[in-house]
Length: 142
Image (tube, rainbow, N blue to C red; front, side):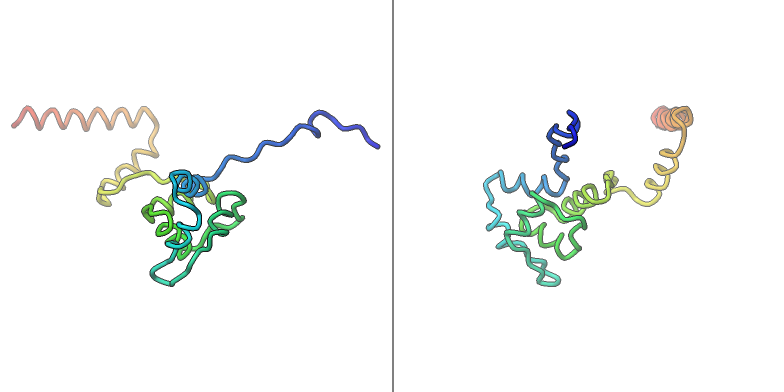
């Protein structure tokens, strides 16, 4: 029988819980049972329903593939959380994508921010100084 090393006998740590799994668990820990969530977990567009076991599985042993849009809408209804928050959590858990909040800004602002994000820190400081100088001039002129 071959000898085992300390590496082989050390217990492996569980991977960190994904964002959607955490959201569902937080709702459950707040006092809403999985069954109560399942009773409300219905997509109004397709009538897709999630059973209690599906919600439990999303928390305890998440599948390899993310939930489909009808399932995400059902999860939103079941948890009482906004669909946007559910979709962002799913994107983070399965795609590693973290949304940045720019809601309320028009396309022009988003485009400008996209350009600024691609600049070096030195260029960003230069643009900030120009914007702040313009704001000071506007205040002085009024």
